[in-house]
Length: 213
Image (cartoon, rainbow, N blue to C red; front, side):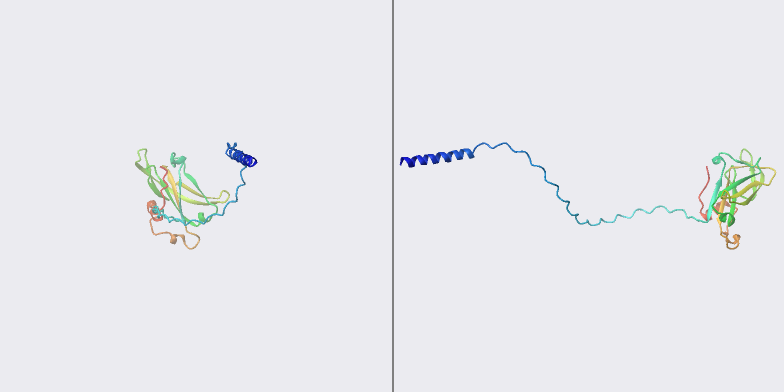
């Protein structure tokens, strides 16, 4: 019996040691493991529905009616700060750049001079001369000629001059080209308006204002 009691005590002692050992303090946390490899990119999701159409914007202003067969050219000296002096010089040549001679020979060319009072006069014709105060003190007979096409420099050549013995100062010279083509008589293709009246021509063809000042 003594032997049996001893065995029981030994068993209890062993259980107690196991219990105390299992209830002891935890050890330190180990280092973090290496990061895993990045996973593959997932498939794209479905396209979302289209948004609603925005409201229509306000209509812009109407553009100017154009005419591809009509063009105007304004000639001035030093940007209009100097004058064509027909009191000493008798003529000035004017040049219109164009790649071929077609528009030079197959157009009606209208010519006008603008005096120092900013009044436009058709030429060939009689233009009043002005004194320094801007008052009419005489008249000058002007001519206008188409001298043809300068093939070397690709330009049309025109001349404006005075036929009178006295001259005047002119602020600017304006040409209007009305392309008519080479079919039929050019005079019959022109509109039934007063072509010597620049304002009437400008209104008919809806030409922009090319004044320099």
